[in-house]
Amino acid sequence: MKKVIALILALAMVFALAACGGKKNEGGNTAAKWPNGEIDFFYPYSESSPTAVNAGVMNDWLTEKTGVRVTPTYDSTGNGWKLAQDLLAAPADGQTLMVIGGDALEAIQQGIWQEDITDESKFTVVTGFVQPNPSVGCMIITQKNSPYNTWAELEAYAKAHPDEVKVADRAGSVMTIKLKSLFNQTGLSKYVHWSPAKGSSEVKTGIDPANGTFNIAIFEESQAVAYLQQPEKYKAIINCRPDNDFSYYPEGTKGLDLIKAVPTLADVFGAEKAVQYNVPNTSAIICKAGTPAEIVAQIKAAVDALGDVEKSTDEKSWYVRQRVSGGTSKYYTWPAADILNEWKRLTPIVKEIVNMK
Image (cartoon, rainbow, N blue to C red; front, top):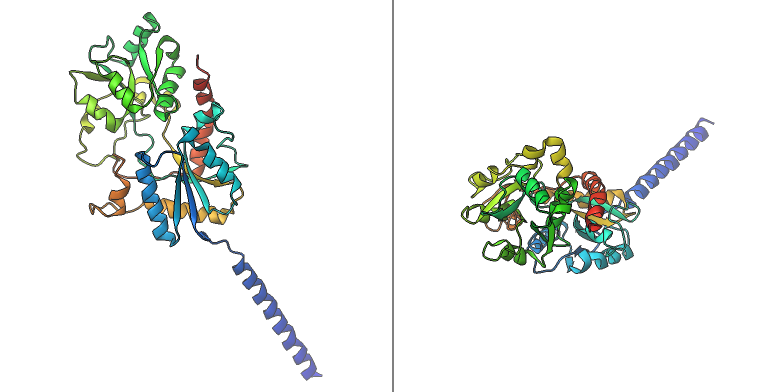
């Protein structure tokens, strides 16, 4: 009898172990791994644009990290709405990715985009795209002989001379969104004349005192240095950055002393209004909604790692390669939730800009 009981217990143990082993095996087989084949990466701008430099670095980085081919597709048409449609038509497996920036918010309000990038039922924001700090300022530049030297003086002059101040309006540019956001929220927009500009080259030519097509133009801090170095021709009214933190610039950066000397949004309006008026130039990597969370986490980890590479002067290093189009000392990524919340905050502001008369 004891032998029979022992045999029964032994068999029960075997079946129990077999059952446990089967469950463990099953769980291991269902773990999502990324990537699972070649990666398609969509970029909503032209291959010849400066931003394409960062795209190339990201493609090479992911290829090295994952061991699979990364195929880039570029299209500047309508801020990439055609690529967004292709993304939505692809499987939700993380094999198709897209970079998108805040400039798409304007295309959405204009009806160019058929989908809303903040719609979480269609898109998942994976992580911030590796780029210079998006809160780096943008200078509002005018000619030396303009009858205003500060924001307060510009406001007073524009209100006393409606429609006389000509402001460069480069529609579709995140730079113009930054400019119009400030002018709209302060109520100054209705007193100035918005002069159309076809591109950055036309803005640069038009702000030259020899031409005088525009009285006001906006340039990124690093671009503005060239104007600040010509005080006989130009002057800065305000730096559209939310703070006075310049710590991420490399020590000895050329022109940094000139940048620091220009009043910021925080200086003119205070810390709270500075955040409200600021439009950070954030870009993010998105994938199709429904992509498994574990795959999204793996993509995020791979992308974010590029932002953490150690500083190096080796010309072939990842650090140097990713800094070609930027001026700050470090490249950053940002949490997906932060970018999504920022886009949602900016949506009504951009809607107002698009509906400007």
